[in-house]
Length: 278
Ligand code: SAM
Image (cartoon, rainbow, N blue to C red):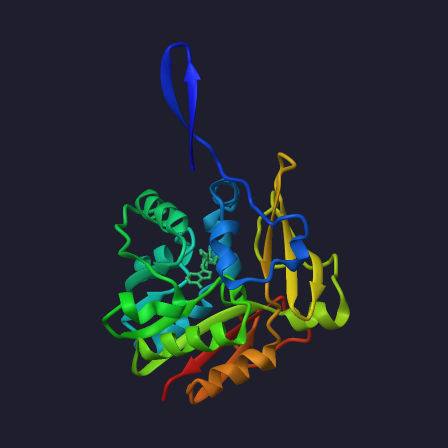
């Protein structure tokens, strides 16, 4: 967004950082298309400045990279590129990676990060998941949708459409890896202060501010006291698994907190679904 300003007699263009817009009643904002308004520049840049990528690597471990390698995967479509964390990791691990996001802001930051972290030129495609095959023409060994991204879809119709598009872009024996927060634990047991709710480092706090069956509103607080929000749909584990099967995936395994075992521990913060096409 550009604002015209005047200094002396010279007209200058000042880049304004748009604010997040949730209106007078943020709890009524339950709309799939709203995600592009939530990842505003100020939020994205602050997040990226404060989250140490190296520590995040360590926190996530090599779970999904090992999984892709063990299956002989070569080509990967990262459908939730965000600021590029997973795409850069995939490229560094040798995967032939294409990076998709519905937010142009995010893709610009991801491209910049690719250059900063290792001089990689990311192959980016601006596309919404619900029309993915309009813009992506090849087929991939794997699709990854990581960092609690699928939660941005607010209607079942959108979720089914997105999964059908992911399915279609996979080769006949392809695999989808999709992760999500463990919303069941929060919906059933309430918020727990012992939880960090995913890796945010020491400087950023991410915590649920409001939850009901149709909305998980999280607050992100930064050291300068600024705060941002994301409104998300609280996916229940079994519901996501059912949708994956219903769109055609033959086998769905769910892991807890990037563990190597099938065992979902009692109360993991994160769940990772691995869905096989055949
Ligand atoms: N994987 C990255 C990470 O973990 O750092 C980014 C995750 S970020 C939480 C979620 C990303 O999904 C955002 O960049 C957002 O723009 C994108 N996204 C959400 N809904 C989308 C949709 N319907 N189509 C395309 N991208 C979408």
